[in-house]
Length: 135
Length: 115
Image (cartoon, rainbow over all chains, first blue to last red; front, side, top):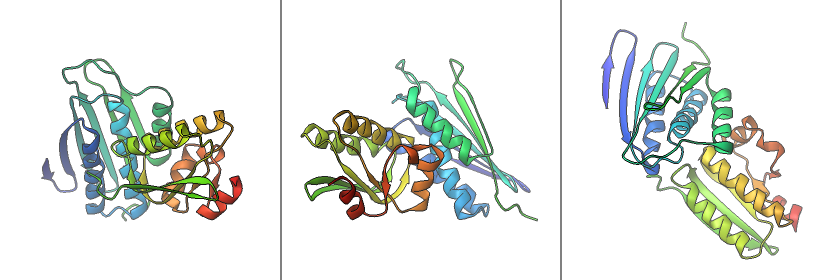
């Protein structure tokens, strides 16, 4: 993990192996970045779940490879970019009900999100704006 | 990773009650799925799921509960949930599942509804 502090932007990078018990690190990092930026409890909880769903939407049934996440925090918004680096085994992402539930959750909890599930480098991103902007 | 996750079960008025606590996510949902499958496989078509102690729940957990609900209803039973935590209720609301599951504020109320 690396952190770069600029005048108003904080960038945190996280790379984790795709293991069920390690996805928690993605949401813990989201909560830490948002808390450090002064986001409210409700926003932090929304972001925690949204980041979990972002990861799940890429990982699906895959149990190998790595997830790479970048958290960019500006004054009133946090953007999370996530991409999946394939492992040795050909596996597939989420389908059906689970994917639908993830998308519904993301729609409700963040201001913007998107996916690019192109072969080779499936990626997804989200943007969560502070409910009560500074200034 | 989530050391606070626990599942317990007991019966109330002959109705099985499965209680989960802690965070239910992609890592901890499988034990919940297994417990619910074991309960329905033992011939119980209605199971009360107590989520009062749950602090986090993602779409994997929802998928487990939806799967269990389908099995219960196919067997002529139901899967009432017990939830009071607003954060957890919110996940059901935004996914439209409050209209799918019967949701109660206490285990007693849920058991009474199906006993």
